[in-house]
Length: 450
Image (tube, rainbow, N blue to C red; front, side, top):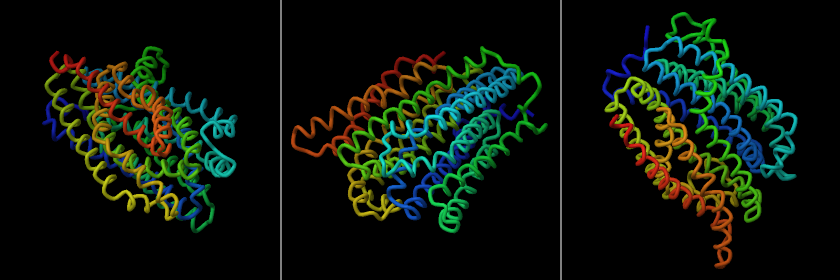
């Protein structure tokens, strides 16, 4: 049965709730298990282990970027063609997205194992942290491939009309990870390797369930023989639409390499651990925003494909209001109780002292981040890839990268602390990124009238 027909008939507020709530739950639970990794590692191993884990984050973000390239692009494209009532094309998108996932997976696994130490050093590993980072990454690389496979398929499950099933698959993997983490770290005493094994095993379980959905004959869109034929035009469409989250993740990872070198320069390994703690908290709220955008995506894509401009405008406005509100809550928490949040991750006195001001600087502009994220995801959903790309990477590449050198230099010249300048550069970049996102959005108002 076609599970997507309600996307053009049901009330927009009800639809966004139906699609966004499971996506938000999935993102939050996934973020919580990432936080759990850091909490268990911080409490069960050491603060340096958190820093080592922080070194691996940009590498894992690059791997996730390839997953986003395929997953976001194929889900957005599937929603549009389902709005055009072309089920056979949707099945071809499913099969070709799987082919791309396995191709990219083979590439990053080979590169990761072949050049691991060089990559870790490039991203700021020191003699004190590289052993932790290497031990974690050796085990977790296959798990990252399974993660990209799972995220790709759950996005397609959501796009084809099964938002709750998508949620249960992701939440099940996250819960399993949170059960295995303390068992492997504290009971088996496997250290940081225990966290890596927990991630790999849980993602393998989720991937199996996600694949089984598209084998089930009851599924609206499923694997058929014709869907496995490689189609270059489908590859191109998937990659072009998915390029926005891909470049955003790659840019973020590249900037982290430069940012970590500046953090070590002005604050040492503890500064790297600090931004890892702050970003972990911020990512929890950003995951809520992304969940809302994932709920918006099939509604926007389907109605764009079907030509319902009023419904398109309705879901955009509602998603925007929701994400700005979430950003406001994040900013309020970060400003009022930064110390309490940081103590969740570590009791190290130096880390706590350094984290309080960083938390305030990095969360105060979260409402603007919500605005920017919504715009980027919306234009990606309606096949406007270049607008989405510029919106998504502007904060990292155009603004943050130069600011992490300019602002600390100015602060130091004025007699201040260079580390404070690094925190401030993030705040300034958030403002400038939102301003550019607004300007680009104003150039595309016609999509709501056509």
